[in-house]
Length: 431
Image (cartoon, rainbow, N blue to C red):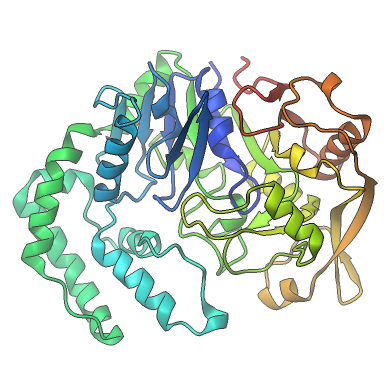
């Protein structure tokens, strides 16, 4: 059976939630492999809208196992609140339908406080645009070997030792930032209280998934954010704090790389970005405003307005390479309805030199200007199209040109937020 990784191939907000939900019907297991509750996936099922942040998108589908892997950093208080909210919408969530890796690092209140204090103290040009939810500091503690992990909640002595190690580091930081030291006893008490709601979901996820794989079950690996926010291959330092590319899927749940059979890159038919950082095709004119309004471009997690621009084929070709993308799901094609002319970025001009990739150096990125190719738009509506026959010829030409420029075929085409408004070209789960 095929196992599929879903990754965002731009700066996030590409519509992963809908595509993962669409694919989850074909999967037995849906596993989150990185990120935290800074992710934001909106699912529209019938008349019901689900907004997920920490939970895998598969939780709204009955008969599936949803997994939070060790590559995730988890805010236990947020998770409990999110579970209660989803249960309130009639979704059953039990230890039989949701598992959390025992070695998952926790996001503590001190992480969010540090995250926000740093961002507030930074000069305007140095702000990262973080969500302030403690994701970055939690990952820092993970690699610094001072995390409190899910398994630590089961033993008081271990929990105290982990907290003490973390506080030695964090109280020193807080003094430098002018923040009061952490109340050790209150933190331990809060962790013990929440542990009763978290530990029932704890499991050796690596073992469970290896057994599922051997039994021929289909696993869908779900990432958060987008590949251009990857800590190594994104527009550093305006990136997230984890690896987002497809290779992280195996590490983030405890499987080997041979477990990945197909990588699906989610790509919006134009480009958006939230927060700070370079954005070569950004539009600040009426076209950019129109894309934002038609696409309802506001972050699910932050509510912040997204920056909008023309499709950047150069960048998507780059992320398809770093994630080994086999096919893309092209979303929000309908947002382009009514534009007389469309532009696609095919490369960059850097001081008179043509580049077919975005350079790593920040000063060079800032000097890159996009090289555009123009295509005719279309006046007919593509919203809700479910077959190629429903699309105007110009829209099909646009899709085909995208495929050529990014050197990757379209496997799925999404024409609205509705789950069934999807054109299937290639089934990623096909054996």
